[in-house]
Amino acid sequence: KAGNKTICGDDAFQLYYTFGFPLDLTELMARERGLKVDTELFVKLMDQQKERARAAQKGVSLAASLSNVQLPATDDAAKYQTDSCQGKVLGWVTSEGFTAEGEFEDAHKPAALVLDKTCFYAESGGQVGDEGLIRGEDWEFIVEGTEKVGNCVLHKGRLHRGGVAAGDVATMQVYQDRQASRKNHTATHILQWALQKVLGDSVKQQGSAVCPDYLRFDYTWPKGLTPEQSAEIQALVNQKIAEGLPVTCVSLPIEEARKLGAMALFGEKYGDVVRVIGIGAPDKDHFGEAFSKEFCGGTHVSNTSEIGGFGIVKEESVSAGVRRITALTGTKLVDYLMGRNAIVDELVGMLKVPADQITSRVAKIMEDNKSLAKQLKSGAAAAASAQVSADDLLARSSRQGATVVVAESIPALGADQARGLIDSLRAKAGSAVVVLGMADGDGKVMLFAGVTDDLIKKISAGDIVKQIAPIVGGGGGGRPQFAQAGGKDPSKIDEALRTAKTFITGKLS
Image 1 (cartoon, rainbow, N blue to C red):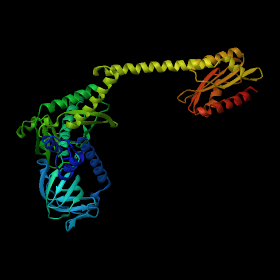
Image 2 (cartoon, helix red, strand yellow):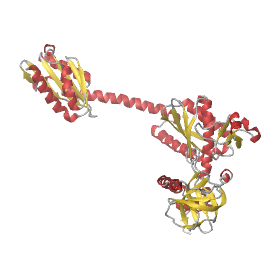
Image 3 (cartoon, one colour):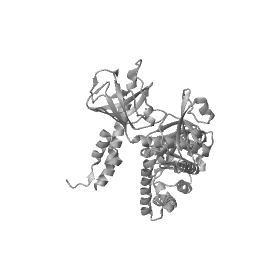
Image 4 (cartoon, rainbow, N blue to C red):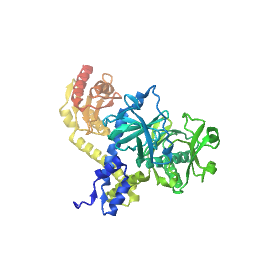
């Protein structure tokens, strides 16, 4: 009525978060009516909610209140078949423990619902627990995380409205994020196969993290991937995705699974019968033909084509001999690549070159900058040298008997120019001790000392700089005739020069 053609992202978020109504359906219905949805605000609100949920779960350990408590078992077989189901409330867990009587009505108190059945996946094997909504006849509970204690699934979150009573029938709805987790989990299995294909069978999994936004995989390898290895691994994973291969799940006696070559995570404990995920077998009867076979209790796509694409965004060291890959799939990968393309387009406009020439153009700019920096430094040193003449320094010098003593702070010079200036002073004076102090634009201090040959039995240039370098926060040394030192405190140069004069006077007396 108001003529606004955009559905507010906040409204779309409330539909999704409170009622479990998917964003894509909101967008579809909006398009049918000539409207659009503010998806940017929707994504922002979703990210904020995820951060709040993670922070809340970090701060609350409901499992700690369950020591010596016998919890009812939850049938969670539906987590592999559906995103929604019905179950009966058996009770709830708070910081006080498990309760199966009365009614829970405190919307401000962290809690976890316990039901006889669930379709929620509890955090396990590196895959995060599901989030979603549990709804009764006159109440709603928002699930912000799911974990398992023994055989009991805890649906952790907060009461949104109404009051929950034991025995209530509830409808459960897992949020769409689960599909993204499925994609990432299956991609993790293919990634391990590809790593072993490229690097060899010595590669072993050391851990993983599977969540809706990304996947992370830790593996044994002594050094970082080369660009060529990374490209080959990504190509292999994407090839298997493009082939649209079936993903099959079977339950097998553990010894039979091992004979088929199924991989198990080192250190993990398994029962006599294990769940095995195979990728590439046409059906269960030909399970042995799968190119990837792993013990796994997580959720997966039914076909590799559902993953939609794979890309490594980071590869790093975790510890000695263990590397970590962070990767994206599906729409998260598309968003990432679009962002990278936007940067490339911006660079094309700035540098006025085609995209395939950006790296060479940037390399040329960096080389030019390095050359200009050298020229500037050389020019500055030349200008400083022009400002400092040996005659001026001699005119301001003092004498210790027949010996000329120069201890001056001057504009910054290069080491060769400083040496040349000291040589000039020694030649003009005949018998001289020279100490020069300076600081460059970065605050780096340089001290130079020179002594004519007739004085080296009394005083050494090396001894002078060793005496004064600590004053400017540095150190140095050299020969009796010439020495230099560095430091990092320009404010102490004058003090160092005064100390040098006192030291020289004492040695020449």
